Image 1: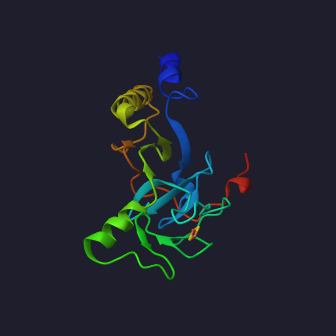
Image 2 (image 1 turned 60 degrees about the horizontal axis):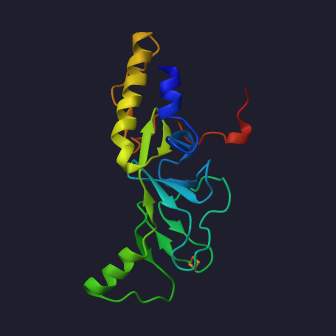
Length: 180
Ligand code: FES
């Protein structure tokens, strides 16, 4: 079973891809992914999103370090475009996106691209959406195995398509300050 889990779930380049842990995402705010600097993890009204860490104005990086940003909007330092935690565009300095449906369509086109996430015990994984059901089933089986051995957690919602509300106190010390 362990070999099967390793092959299907955690194999590099074929399984789920770890992108960050709940501990390091502010209750409302965002942080660059631990695993891929091209990704941003945001928490918006309790839901975690994986968004492109690339501004849709001129393709500059939005967050350039690992510090958590405890603000609901993502603001680009280059020309002040800003985005909500779900990636939707709020606006940009001195830019007229148009009125009505046409303006709304332009804003939708300029939203930050988002990517499907699967969350398990606070670990967030990027997944191929076509295989998400299979991964969720496999992770549920891992949970059942843990539980059968008396090492399961007591909460019932362990695997979600996006993270639930944080179960940990924040702020948490940065990764560099954790001691083993
Ligand atoms: S590159 Fe982000 S606002 Fe211009």
